[in-house]
Length: 208
Image 1 (spheres, rainbow, N blue to C red):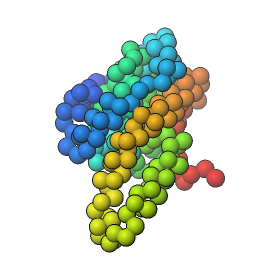
Image 2 (cartoon, one colour; image 1 turned 90 degrees about the vertical axis):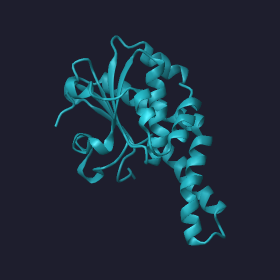
Image 3 (cartoon, one colour; image 1 turned 30 degrees about the horizontal axis):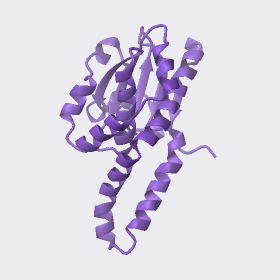
Image 4 (tube, rainbow, N blue to C red; image 1 turned 180 degrees about the vertical axis):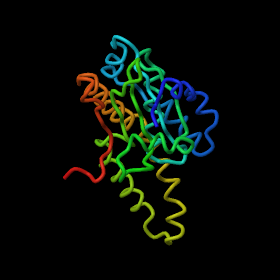
């Protein structure tokens, strides 16, 4: 299954996607509004010779999507260098899995960057690899905060605490995500057609 021009144009705009979010809608909006595009990233996409097409496969229930998707959509809104269409991953599982290695089937979100002819330039998976230590630190901070809670209570509270943490760190994390995404796209553009796409984001298993 391929991401054709016809399929790409079936996606949602950013606002259409936000309007239909059912889970974590307000945190998504809060993060989207808090993110600031780094000047260097802005200049990179503003300076492209022609716009790139960005297909976003995301899911409103996913924690990483809550941080990564609004940041990258904020970038797309800020520049004419990206034409974005958004898809609910759960409705496009076969297509979205085609951009993943078999051992990572189901991973979300996925960002697929294509040239004007819909040739794939880069893909960015889940979130910035550079952000993983911060995500681990988040879980450590929350675990310490919930010490003394019963197992059931801690399990119930943890999701909400993670959401609060992601919102509170939206600007800082957004900068890391956007720089990593921009680096991946720049790498893809520097490659010949036969060497594309560049792949960025998290890796599994992690590189040792």
